[in-house]
Amino acid sequence: MMLRIVAAIAAISVVFTIWLILVIGTAGGFVPLLRSGALGIMTFIGWTVTLALGPITAVQLWRFKETGRRAGLVLFGFGVVYYLSGLLWLRALDAQSAQIVMAVAAYALPFVFLALPSARQACS
Image (cartoon, rainbow, N blue to C red; front, top):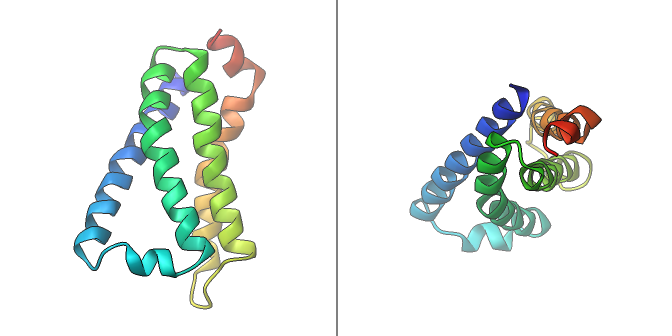
């Protein structure tokens, strides 16, 4: 059951990423984001990871496949790295630490769950 919840989280992440890309694209484009430096570049990488691995994670985890678990580890692991980088090194002065910590937790929980031996067994 928990694997299917993580699969749904991955699917929601893909939908939200598509929505965010559309909003940013219509609100001024991607050039300002790219010019923002390392965080902007990491954002683009994160979008790519989400759009490439999110659907694989969602579908294959729903089917209890190991490829879904591994794709999910990369997907959620990158999210943890992205938000921790934002918190520790790349944070803007006006960024809310509490929101960033919540985002780290939101990515860390599925990552830890997928890393558990029980998740590996369920997907084998």
